[in-house]
Image (cartoon, rainbow over all chains, first blue to last red; front, side, top):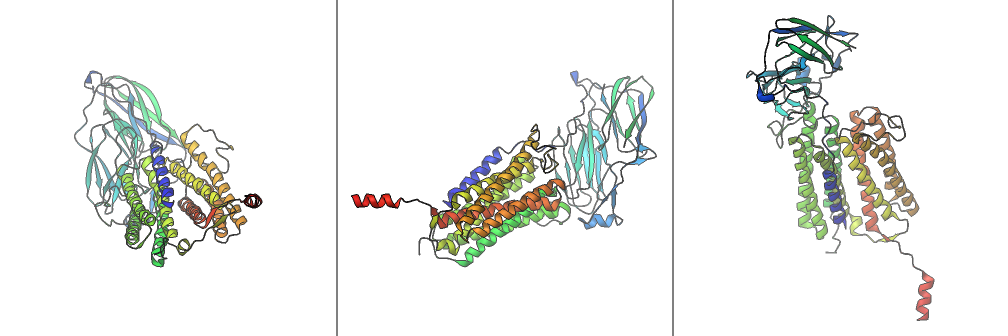
Length: 255
Length: 315
C-alpha cells in the first residue's frame, strides 16, 4: 500500500515535469534589426561621421553600496566597499550608452578577427557595456584571483554559462546573431552586471564617461539611430547624412 | 520472525535521521534558488573542475547543496543496504530500494538543471521529486517504528483516514504549483497582498499571473483541508493524531504568513526559503498522519445490530 502511494506520487511528479511549462522568461532584450543580406552584397562604408553627446537631465540615483563579504578576495580588493552606480553621469554626460544605426544599413559586413574583450577585474566587469559584431570572437578574461562564472542571458543567441576558477584564464565564445543589450552576470558575485550588444555592422559606439560618442565611416543615407542604456528607456532619432559630412546628434535622457 | 518484523530501533533511528536530513536538504535547495545561485557552479558533477571549490558567493549555496545532497544520498544507500540485509518484509525492502533510486534520480535531475541552464520542466521535476523523496523517507521511518510493528487497528470513527489522505494530496498539488510558479519566475507576478493586482481576482491574462493566483487559491484549499483534518483529529480524541494535526494547522497558518512576507519583501531570502521548507514540513506531517491513520485505523463499519439479531433468530 505504501509502495503504491509512493509510486503514484512519483508518477504525479513525472506528469508535472511534462506539463512544467515553458522556459523561464528571459530578459526582454530585443534583437537588433539585422543588416539586409539580399544577395549577400557587401556592405558599403563611407566618409560621413556621426558624433554627439548623450546627456542626462536630473539627479542620477545614488550608487548602491555593495557588500562584498561573500568573497573575501573581492572584499580585499575594495576595502572601502564597492559603489555600483548603474547610471554614470559626469559633467552632465551619460556613460555606457550604446548608440547604433538601428535601420537604414544594407549589405553584409564581415566581422573582424580581433576578439572583443570582456574582463573581470576587481570583481566587476570591464567594460560594463560591450558592443561587438555578430560572428566576432568574444574573449572573456578572469583577471581576479577568485573564481567567476560568466553567464549571458541572450534571447536570440545561444545561452552559455562557463566557469573561470583561476586568475588569467581566458575563454573564447561567439554570438552569431545580432542582438542588443544581452545581460551578463556572475552567479557567484550577483552584483556583477554588464551588457553585450551584438551588431551586424560596424556603425555603433558606446558613449564615454562624459557622454560623447562618435560613429565613423557611415555611407551617405538616411538612418534611424537608437540610444540604449541598460536602465533607461531607449530613444531613437532619424538622421540623414551626406558623404564627407560630420553630422551631429544628441540624446537627452531624464532621471 | 513475525510478519511485521521485529522492531529494530537503530535502523528506525537511522531512517528518521535520513528523513530529517532530507528536510534540511530541501531548505538548502530552496536557498540555492532564492539566492539565484543555481548556476553559480557551471559544471557537474565536479565544481569548477574540483571536488571542493572555494566556497565563496553563490558557490557556497550551490556546492553546499551538492555536498548535503551527497550526504543524504549516502545515508539512503546505507539505509537501503541495511534494510535489504535485515528487513523481513519484502515491501519495506522494495521501498528502501525505491528511495535509493529516487535520490539517484534526484541527483541526476540536479545535474541536468545545471548542464542545461535551468530548464523549467527539469527544475520543477527536481523540486517535486524532492518532496516525494521526503515522503519516502518518512514512510521508511514509520514502517520501521515500534508503533507499526505492534499496531492493533481500531475503527476510524472520526474519518481520519480520508481527511489525512485528502490533506496530503492537496498539499502535494500546492507544492507542485509553488515549484511551477517559482521556476517560471512568477513569484512576484502579483506583487501585492492580500489583494491581487488590487483586486480579489486579478486579470488572468498571463501565465505567470494565472499560476501565481492558482497558488494563492491553493493556499486556501490547504488551510481548509488541514483544518478539516484537525477537526477530525479533535473528534477522534486520539492523542496520536490531535497534537500533530494541530501542529500541521499551525504550520499552515504560518505558511500563509510566510507567503505574504515573501511577496511583500520582494522575495527576501529568509522568508522565501522558509516558505519552501515549511511547505515540505506540512507535506511530511500530513503524509505521516495519513500513513498512521492507514496503519492504526480501519474503515469504520456501521453494523445494524437489531437487524443482524432478528435475522439470526428467525433462521
